[in-house]
Length: 188
Image (cartoon, rainbow, N blue to C red; front, side):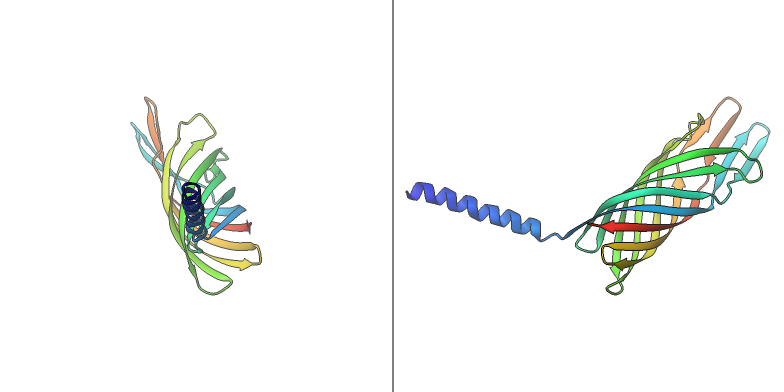
């Protein structure tokens, strides 16, 4: 009988130890939508005849995000955004889709207000055949208001683009950009 009770006791104790260690990490899952504005950015073009910088219009950015906040301070987010790249005064447009993994540290100011600061890395894909696909990385900071299961926030971000497109006649690359994003998020 002792041979059966000892392994059973070890199994029960180890199960409680594993579940209590898992319970020590508070997890808050969320899903939300984003709407924002490109504040700056453009495209640089190099040709045999010279270089040119074309600025983008301040167009809308929209997207979805979801993730988890661990212990009320460490937020991990997977985000998708879409923006239309339109050149100022030309009428030429192209779409750009971006998928980013973001980390934010959440500073609790009060029960309802938080400041956030973090970094992101991701991949962007141009919708036309320009081959302006590549890695992006950046930083962001923001403020958010919590109301029951919802949070509403605003975030200022800076993104660096690594994508370049080239042919026999030209070479182009996206300039770094600044964005202002707003979000509504539901917490499960």
